[in-house]
Structure formats: structure tokens, C-alpha cells
Length: 101
Image (cartoon, one colour):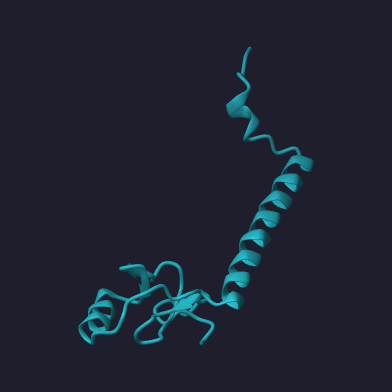
């Protein structure tokens, strides 16, 4: 399976269409009768061919990449907040604490 989504080449694929095997990102997934497709056309084609429609598991490699990406973004956001706090940027606290004369 390719590593990039067929419709969004800048986004990493997390799975593929059960019918046409096109690589898909999370935004492109279409669930139909518990199965992952790239479009309703593929879902209907698969059903019309008489093939059983069932769950198609996301590959372990793609799932682990997605998990690592989410964890990395969380660490990046935490680091940014720490740096902003060290620099004395208190924009967030001004909404919490009342500003008085």
C-alpha cells in the first residue's frame, strides 16, 4: 500500500479501500455496512458483485504511525506552551483572571 492518500497526496494514508485498494487518509474514509471504502460507488460496486461486505482492518504499521503522529503533536503543543510560559506570555491567563484598576 502507498503511504499517501490518493485524494490528498500530502496526507499519510491510514488504510485502503476494500474494493479498489486506493490508499486513504482519515478524511476520505467511507463506512458502509461496517466496511471501509473510498466512495459510495466502490461500496455499491462491491455489494453488486455479490462480495461479502465486512470489516477491513487498518494495517498495524499505519495505525502505529497515526498514534505516533498524535503523540508527537501533543508533545509539540506542550513544549510550545512551556516556552510561552517561560517567555512570560500570559494571554491565556488574562481571560481567567479579572483585570482590575
